[in-house]
Length: 435
Ligand code: GUN
Ligand code: ZN
Image 1 (cartoon, protein in one colour):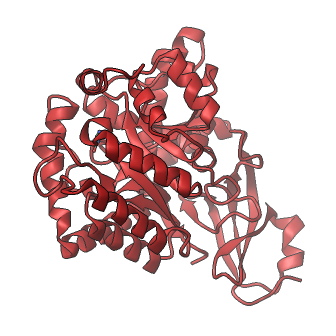
Image 2 (spheres, rainbow, N blue to C red):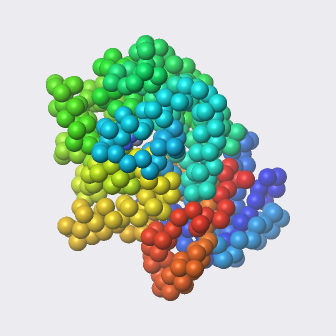
Image 3 (spheres, rainbow, N blue to C red):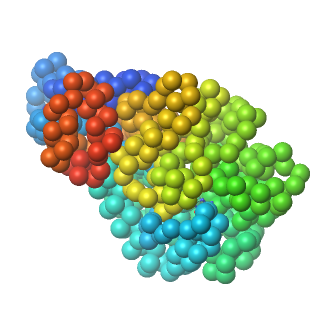
């Protein structure tokens, strides 16, 4: 009999990925999910299965009856900027004018800790409304923005990853690092302050090659080697003008990705946003090094950056997973991102006569996203041992969803209807760390 204290059972339909490396969903229409809190304060999944088979073992536990609803893993967003919450929906003629006219001015405001705290609080409310329980997040080039983010995440008991942005050139006053050495010292101090505290993780965060000197990128690579359990996050090969600029700034480099490679930034737990305009060698290199691509379809459509090639990513075995990229991205909603990913994938996979199934895009935003971050078995899934971070879905949340899901003749058809029609209205509850 499991410990009764702070253990809990939930009766609902259950959706999860028994093998976190595969998109095959197990759906239990009358299921039981049992959670138990460890001595470290983290609530984890203790058992999952059919109600009739499991309930006799857990009869003494408090039971929440959510029949008629679905429990699914919390979504994992592999690339988002919390400081761009107020940038969402700012149109521009492409990436570089968007950065200069909208993004940099907003991020400059995060030198003020009270502004950073207020935005962090709103941001986490928004993630929760949309069922996102873990995110790999850019802060800004101010240590205070990272402290605000992690303090808020810690008080909400979230599993979150973030880092101070490194940018020591081609950036406005107030955002540009005045001292390269200091930016790296601050990064190391933040790693020591936050990485591995509760469920928080640190990501070494050079913004992108054009806004870092070679010394700053090299220093970031040295930190990435000294702290191999931290993450690395940056942007690569997003936009044609950006790529031309990188070629001018780093004429010796074989490719844009090659700049990061030569600085020691390509390794497991390194996550590269966009990866639109890579060549075959780049894709092979990322795959060999265990680096992952964060695919940001709503952002790429909004900024007219290009289309991620799912066909080539699959054939080169390049790890990839979904991301909102708010504020270039147009929505916090994983449903909007999955829908956009499906649509974009038709362009590349269509040539081969395939498309992405609803299970696959769902996996790319949950268990597959956790795997891309090196967190399989930890979050984004409901197998025993995973964190108790999950969402409650009402498949009949809107009149059209009710009509469409009732008419669907298979799990795949129901999931597809949700991917295409879904948004925050589908998310009825979010359980974070078992609460
Ligand atoms: N490249 C460098 N910075 C950014 C950013 O903030 N958003 C996007 N989409 N691309 C970038
Ligand atoms: Zn981004």
